[in-house]
Image 1 (cartoon, rainbow, N blue to C red):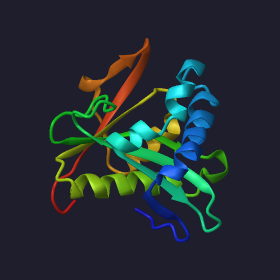
Image 2 (cartoon, one colour):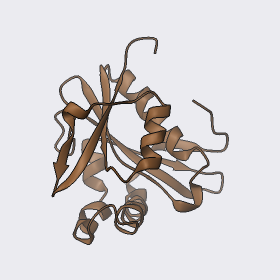
Image 3 (cartoon, rainbow, N blue to C red):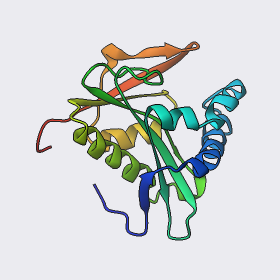
Length: 168
């Protein structure tokens, strides 16, 4: 995993939740990955931060470049994680930051934190049209786990998993 100098990765602060919510709406609703009806839920980042680890990436000018949420299995917002697993949800990178390693850095931080939590596996689900994200996940060692695929509001979700064995 490449390091990304000048990129600050950390847990979002309450005063940043509104900005994170706007990024989620702009990426998911604005780019057609979620219906407009999901806007209020995406805009309200506080429950995500309360239940999981809401992470952000900022550049040297403090510009919000990306966000992701890490949940433990059993959390209300976790969709596919089971016991002893963590789940990545809502990875979003601002269009101006794409191709700069922001998504990779956020996912790598989720991997590090899931290991720190003692999880055996890190899982996520993605839409079939999110091919750039799928390439990222595969490059970082995630494997398609089609037996766990599911559907949300009639839209298929593809599941990926990364085994978090010690030393890996």
